[in-house]
Image (cartoon, rainbow, N blue to C red; front, side, top):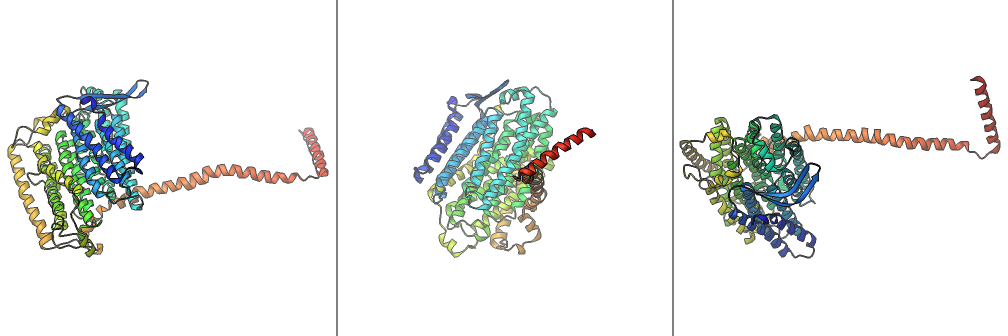
Length: 630
């Protein structure tokens, strides 16, 4: 079955081609089901490969792709525990999102176009995680960037949505430039871009080689763009302009995890670049805390979840920075479950609210939307780290790894974890408890979503409840199923192997976490339900601190003033002065001079023969005088 791995990305590619070419012929019901079945086929094949996989890795050659001199880049796939894990996440969660979309997008005029984009997105993501070299990975990397642009700007008749799509595309291109330079430097250094060849050569190198540090930093710049880390994170919250299934697909299981996957895949390079790992840790920690504070004051249900995603990605990068690669991928997995669940449940709320996304205008929805309420509660428990839900195990594992590395790092991550619970239970109680604060028309329209939407929610709720048991801490079990599965594909720095958190610390961490969560839940209930402290609708009523967080520290405005405006000014200078005045002026000046000279000289052609004779005689006399004098 390993040799059939090339079919995994082919199925969604077929779905894209069939739906794109036949969208005017295929009925809606067939389009959604066919697109979903193509992703399901990829999931079944991925599951089969998972069941057959042992230790080690296998390269599946597809065809010769690029050959030029000594450069030879085959189109081939690498099958190992890391790629299999990502395959199951992308196809499994991706399939549930496809099924959900059948009900969510049912009335949209671009229904077929939407599913063609979804299938194409999954194709490129599968290409990214399967590639056996950096160039195939980069092809998938660029492909998901293109598809995210198409999906974020899906409702292209709205100018603001187009701006959001452009912002995502441009900011990702900034990161991609660093990534591309990193790939070029890899080829210059190792003479190859194949994972097996590059990593085999890198194993013999000592730590802190300048060229390896440069390579890993450049690759990380690409990861910062794709996985929305400071300073390239502002595109991700704006990406909420796309339909909610797009938010779930981009922010849960696929695109934003591409940067995490790339660093995990390049773990051998990063393990011998301690300086880069320190940078990764600092950026991840800063992003996690920064985004969590912003989420505290957001009033758009999807914006809260978007900044939550940025924060959780920061958590994952901290895990990568301390060399806990399997822990980072474990949190990628659990996060895919509960964040997809939260986004899709938010979509169910928005669907019931006739498109309303402001949590200040919701409230009391638990009675009208019982299934959505239950699954949203599970997702909130999971992301907040309530035991025994999935986030409890993966987040506490990151905290334990951080404690071993640095108590200061642990402190900032612990504060972030507290903030996560605060903004999530704020969101939960404002949405589902208290009295309804929307319009009468919205209240009349309230109803639970159809089965095509609720069934995927229930399945994701089950995964969010049980997924954490894949990685039980040592105090419960010596067999970390997830970590053991990935062990053969990862190179863990010696510093991580030498020291682990004590059992006493793990018990203390779990006890303090549970107690803190209980206090946060009680406080949030008292504040937002019992005391009905609802955020003001008018910005003039905001408190100064809340206003700063509401406007996301004015980072977008700062970027606009110090980056966008100067670039526009430079562009206008080159347009008006260099292009119009200098280049066009020179070209147009030559033509105008020729026209002027022609118009002037033509007056000499009078048609008077006497004048011509006079001119000729005058010329002869002038020549003679010149010759006599000189």
